[in-house]
Amino acid sequence: MNVIGEKGVQRILSVTAFSAISALLLIALFILNEGLPFIFRYGLHDFLLTSDWEPQAGKFGIFPMVAASVWVTLGAMVVGAPLGIAGAIFLSEFVPKSVMRVVKPTIELLAAIPSVVYGFIGVMVLAPLIRTYLGGPGLSLLAACIILGIMILPTVISISIDSIQAVPQSYREGSLALGATTWQTIHMVTVRAAKSGIIASIILGMGRAIGETMAVIMVAGNAVKIPHSALDSVRSLTANIALEMSYATGLHREALFATGVVLFVVIIILNSVAIVALRKRVAKK
Amino acid sequence: MRIHPRYTQRLAVTILGGATLLTLGVLAFIIVFVLQKGLPAVSIDFLLSNPQDMGRAGGIFTTLIGTIILPLLAIIVAAPLGVSTAVYLTEYTAETRITRMIRFGTDCLAGVPSIIFGLFGFIFFVTTLGMGWSILSGGLTLAFMILPTIIRTTEEAVKAVPKSYRQVSFSLGATRWQTVKRVILPNALPGILTGIMLGVGRSIGETAAVIFTAGSSLRLPSSILDSTRTMAVHFYILAREGISSENAYGTAATLIIAVLLINLTAYWMMNRFIAKRS
Image 1 (tube, rainbow over the protein chains, first blue to last red):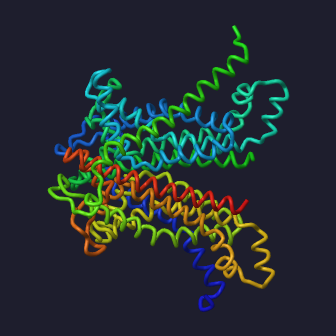
Image 2: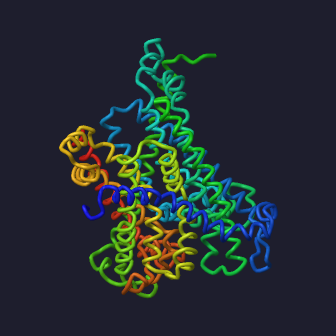
C-alpha cells in the first residue's frame, strides 16, 4: 500500500463509498428513462386509471393491476401486521432472553426461504383449501394475501422487536412500580414508546408485499380484472411485468417499464417514510 | 363494564403467545412439507446428473453449477465495494450530510424489489452494455442487490471492534490505513463474513432478478457470457409450467437445504463473533 499511500487509499475509499447510492441512482435513471417517455405520451391519467390492458390493440390501462396490488398489499397487512406485532411483543416482553435468542433468528429464517417456495406452498396447500371450502378458482386475491402476510412476518417481527427492546427499562419499571400489570405496561407504555419503529416495520412490510413478484404470480391467478371479491383471480403490477416481459417488444415493453416506474416511485416513497420513522426511534434512544 | 386487569393480562398473554406459536408453526410446516415431499427425490445421482427433456427427467447438475457461480460472481463484485463503503463510513468520516445521504441511499436500495433489479439488469447489462443473457449480467445484477446487506453488516462488525484497539494502534504510530488493515478488518472478519453469507443466501433464492438477466438455459455454461439457470429459476419453471412435480419437489428440497445451511452458518458465525466481543 506504500505505493498508493495513505491519501490515495482514503481517496479510493471515498469513491467506493458512493457505490450503493450510485447503484440506486443508476437503477432510477434507467428505469425512468425507459418508462417515463411512455407515461408522458400515453398520459399518466389514462395509464393509471383506465382498465383496458390490450397490448395488441395498443391499450395500456393498468388500473386493474393497481387495484390488485393495493388490495393484495392491504390484505397482506391485515394478515401479517397483527400477527407480527403480537409475536414481537410476546418475544420481547414475556419470554426469557435465552429463548428469544433462539427464536428470533429462527423467525428471521422465514425471510431466507425463497419466494418461489412460498408461492409453491400457496399453490399446493392453500389454493386447494380455498377452492374446497370457500369456492372460486382457489388461486386468488385471498391466497395472495395470506401468502404475502406470512412472507412479511420476519420483517415486521424483527424490526418491531428491535424497537421494543430500544425502549428504556426505566419506562417499564416506572409503570410497574405504579401497580400496573405487565400487559397494562406494554400497551400503555412500551408499545407507545416504540410506536415509530413498529410503524416503520409495517411500512417496510408493505414495501415487501407490493414488490413481491414470484410468489404472487404463482398464487394470485393473474386474470386482468378489477377484483370484486377476495376469491377473484387478480394480477398485481409486479406480476404484469414479469409475465409479459419475456415476449414484449416496442410500445408494449415500454408500457411494462412504465409499470416498473409506478412501482419504483411507490416503493421509494414507502422506504423513505420508513427510514425517517426509524431515525426517530434512534434519536429517542 | 371493566374487565379486571388480571384477566386482561391472562387474555393478552394467551393471544400473543398463540400468535407467536402460529408463526413458528407456519415456518415449521413450510420446511417440513417441502423436505418431506422433496427429499425422496434427492440423491447423489439427482444432484450430479444433467436435466433431460426440459427437466422432466434427469437431475439438476447444470442448475447447481448456475446456483454456485452466480452468487460467487455477485460476491466477488459486491464484497470489496460493500466492505470499503462500510470502512469509509465508520473509520474515515464523521457523521455529515454526505454520510447520511449514503446511508439513506443504502437503506433505499435494500428495499428495492427484485423485479425492479430484474428490469434494470435487463435494460442495463443485457441490452445497453450488450452482455446478453449471461452469467455476467446476472451476477452483476445480484451484486447490486446484495450490496446493502454487505454494507450494513460490515458497518455493524467494524463498529463492534473496541475503541481501545484503535487507540493502541495509533499510539504505536500506525497510520489510519495500517490500523484498518492490520487491526480492524481482521477483528471484524467474522461479522463481515456473516454479511457475505447472508448475501449469498439471498442470491441463491432469487428468481425475478435472475430470470431476466441470466436467462434460463439448461446447458452447462462454458464462459461467463453464457446463459445459465439457477435452482430457484429451475424450480419456478418446473412448478409453474407443470413439467414435473417430482423433480420440482426435489429441486425445492435441495434449494431449502442450501439456503438453511448458509443462513445457519451465518448466524453461527455472528453469535461466535458477538460472544468473543462481549
